[in-house]
Length: 418
Ligand SMILES: Cc1ncc(COP(=O)(O)O)c(C=O)c1O
Image 1 (cartoon, protein in one colour):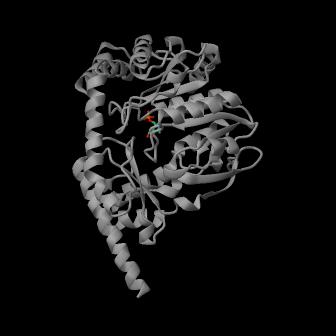
Image 2: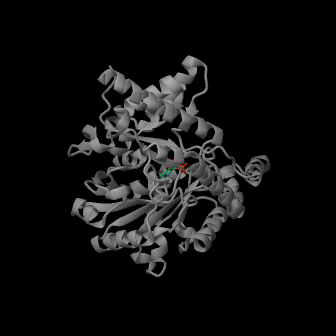
Image 3: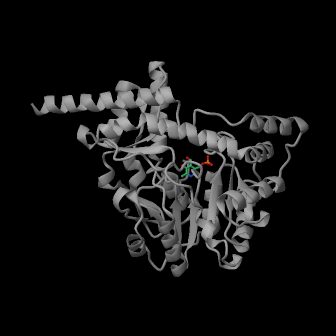
């Protein structure tokens, strides 16, 4: 007989992202037809040639040894320079750690900051990985309600906090909502965190995808604060800006030396180090960043501007997302809940989208931090997330078929009512 698994991990359900990922794969195998994949944030464009060349050259010259838990000094220097010039963030190589994807960097950062019983504040509509990682690190996630247009409101965050709150997570541009915080909102969040003695984690994976205004890094507001008093830990990714999703590369700029020292130990234990040839590819990506980021931004914005307006016209989307790669549709008028909508759309039209209720999971924890029960915020029951970073033809087909499907649901609804 095998022993029971009673870890915190064993109580965490698989996310809505994985559910549809598996369903789409099964549908492709079953029907032998390609599914239009609007469920995953993987771009249709590729990294610049110099990125692939740098990777291959590193492999060929034998630069394939361990590089240590914090990463190649040349890459960290390049990232520090990029943060100073482009983000207005003051960092140093000692406070900057490279990670295999920003996802792993986030997980390690959460492990760096966690302590038993400590709470982390997440928005009630969040990227499920933020919730899963918080639980795995040992945090107790507290989900604060959002205001109009899924924007954070200081009073609601302050009201959700408790003396056990330790971290506030900010994700602008946001996955899944596409909300981009304006400078006043960021400043008020930071003031609140500072006044309450919290750390701030700023996940800036979509920094190059702001369509209405320039991106603002939260840590840029701490440039003139003495290092020991800084509280913002910033997370950056190569995946989105430079289309390097499968390379797995990110970096974390820690607020202060103490946090960087702790995270170095966490990474020593978690990863030993990040893939060395991938880090050389990262140096190349940063060297050609202006051109690549501008081109990729343009491609995704064009997708947004061309493909999404029909969804607004049909009343499924209230406005174009101000940032990121995703749009949240409201399919209330079909009468279907999000999960049924997503599965039927896949089955009948071969289009994969994510059921939005999965971004609004509400776990109930026991004293050990294990999930004992969970449900989904009822207001998210009819939300669907689509990614608009995909091939324009696929996106246009996907949107057209979503609209067709919504109309058919309306007809079916009327028929059954009649
Ligand atoms: C909000 C957010 N943060 C971080 C990531 C992780 O990116 P990566 O691990 O590829 O750097 C993603 C990926 O989709 C994301 O949506």
